[in-house]
Length: 347
Picture 1: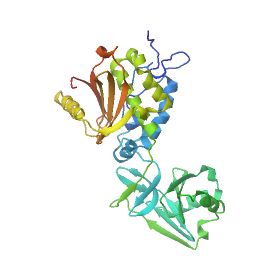
Picture 2 (picture 1 turned 180 degrees about the horizontal axis):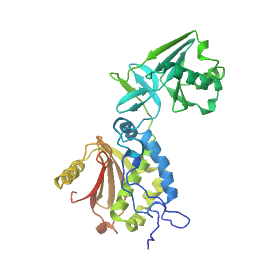
Picture 3 (picture 1 turned 60 degrees about the vertical axis):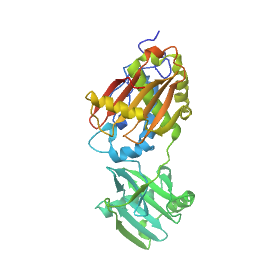
Picture 4 (picture 1 turned 90 degrees about the horizontal axis):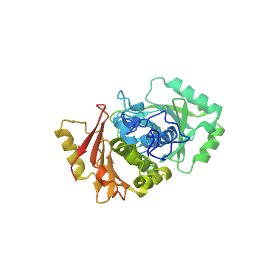
């Protein structure tokens, strides 16, 4: 017997609170619809929020989000300001982030021997130089965010963005740079302080990132399972058939039941059916398809209209509940702020 409050991820209600509601699709990538109150405990919801932060910033989904949106908390007003990282603009390594498919270079000083080059896209050059200089004089290295990149090990870059200090160093040169920063006196001590402006537009951009696959697959699994619970209810979601899925989500081991693959033909069929019955949606929408195959229940998710899906084995034994299940398709058209479910007869 399922009570009103029963977390579908732990099958527990005692000792848990249920004040918040879990989004089907994370709000950070445009999701609006939520599971009913009582489906996901506040503790689990908070744990998922940490996973989603990594997912929305440091995965292939995060990169597309930086280009296309949405912005903070799903805002359509602007694309997300991406994480500060090493970017290559016209073969020059700099500190910056992406917004609206354009690189934004943060105020920074490039140190190379006795030459210091200030680089930025802002107009208030002297103020930016003074701000970086002041922070470096304080020598609070514990607060610095060090980024190892492809920059020459004889150089390092110090940038300032939203009150945070970022230091770009070459591979293996972090300790050497720390020693140099510890003995830092002033940018004026350098023999040559140059100013270099960077154009945001008309440049060739290269970005690299490392994706945490266990986190990525875990978030994909929980999004698909959220949709399953939304469609078929709390009782079915708490059945023993999904205990293995719960275990993998808890252990962050969902790569064992997940795979990336090309968009299957059935996805196109689902989209065609949705449009035939009046659901026009943007090509950058997120799509989820939950479907039966033999004795398994699978779910596939596609983000931003990309050319791949992540397919998850939700259960490998649905014999006892097979008659209660059906194929269903979910669309999160975040640009139009429209989400809908379509029942599917396609096999």
